[in-house]
Image (cartoon, rainbow, N blue to C red; front, top):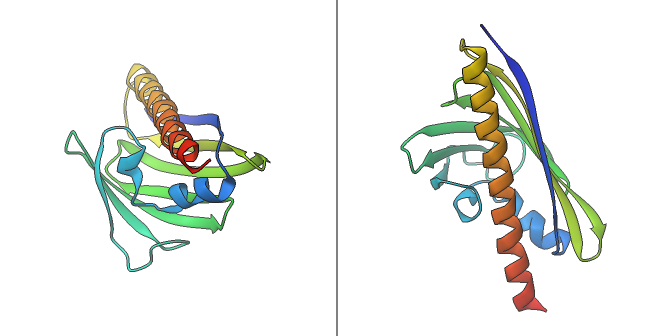
Length: 152
């Protein structure tokens, strides 16, 4: 059977929007804040915006290819995974909204449609992805707030 699901995680980061966006918009900088990422490389000449492509290599050896399909500078980007996940579709958006001059809200949300798997397998996959998003956002928060403390 095929299954459909969504994930949405949000976190507040006490750092200026510009600093947070610099880190988020570096689409190959994932190993500095995302769990279990060994390295990320560009597969395109384009580095930012629609058309940028990255390959993510995880510590486990798995590899995912992602393409940026929408981009609004300083606000959000949307990407799709084209290879490497047990899914027929994966579309995700990472967005940033200022709360005030010194803090922002980051939202990471996605839509997923599975390859053939059992309901139990899909629920486990969704649960693992939710935990991955949450832990990665907490790492992002820690790295930016620690960095921000040194700037003040």
